[in-house]
Image (cartoon, rainbow over all chains, first blue to last red; front, side, top):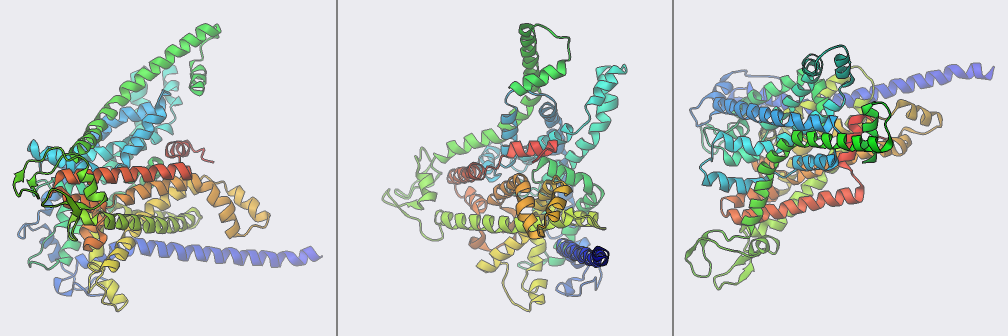
Length: 292
Length: 342
């Protein structure tokens, strides 16, 4: 009798507790989403605002105009955003391709072969990825000045390999480790040659891993600032440098709206990449455990 | 080694042979594996040696050379030469050359006088940002670890700050924190966030926390997802409160992943450059990296000495962290990758 009388109350209490906890989760989730997205939203909203209303605090777009985008892409005030986008693309693609070409072999060995000094090799690669870029800067600045490489593409690509290659090796190693390698053997037993097994079984399975690694490598190159800001010229500067040194029509006056437009142009491709490949990027980030 | 030999024995699957034969074959197989691995890994190692090893050695050599410039003693232009440890004492003891060939403490305004203040700035930023990011990151990870509709929306949203280049982040918040900007409007203040010492420091910490907490949250989340739900259920049955099960279950189990994430963030914060360089704040926010870049065009050899000091400091921090907190980066990440983190 007593248990029968008690049960409904207990249930009701636990149900209400569960509901309360799910409401709290929801509130927390909303706070997180707002905190992460509002600054980005503010950049986009401001980028569409007329210069005269730069500091308008209306939370939605007002005085909408595309002038800021025209200003951002114009070369009239010494900005080269269009060229900088191309430069970032050239540098990012080169660094990513080099790192993948070289790093794939190392990642294969680290994930598939048991060999001596494996821990040391992993440690070295890990250490390299955490290396302070500023320690490379001065000697490279001297070297590139002496051999006339200052402001060339190679002067920007080579230093970036120092952090993109370790990231590539690390992320790819952890992806390859999770691959069902038994399938390779199964294909061989079913009559495939070694090359066929690689082409028909391993490659299609590994392609997403390589692709994700490429995205992470490209993003980390795209976002680099320290080395590029010191070793690039007007002709080779990437977007990060172009945005940091963005100048407006009037001296000593920050062209906020145009900068927000430039920022939106630079960021939107990345945000789209993130939206499409969210799951993969999260997997890559946490597997590699290395900052992008 | 024994485990690798065992692995080899399992792999080979050949008919049983006499122990000696087997050992010889296994050793041969292991040697072949070592050789294959060597050839696969050597391109990466060589490339890293060129892009990292060369600059390091070069920086150390440069650090012991005098910078070309006007000699304080004679007033003549000198080409440099061997400097001994004067470049290092310039930073560590803040000694500048005097006209009589001796040394004196560097006057204010000289970059040498800024070494310890930039050390303070760097460590202050590191300690505060990493603590904030760990706490907020943990909170975000716990929320994302719960099952609810819209969880993937949260996971996508937190990737946005991570994906925005730091240079753009700095410019974006420069606008948000400008005198007439939204922060001052919302709080009806007139704080000079981008130029006053402490407001600029606080602003940079807020920006850095915004930008890098997602990374921390994702790493912690990866650790949380390895804890089986049954453990919590058992604790609940035993009458543990949420708070108690956090301290006695979540924290100890997630500790290895957390320590690695914190180590990464510490090393990353110690080399902070983009935010202070672009956002502003002048000397009050000048980190080590900012100081090296300022010095580089004035005297590359002194800058090399500084970057070598910074490198040694960062190495020491990493060493102490691993030594005393037992963060085993390689082992933890390997275990995490294999999904056997305990």
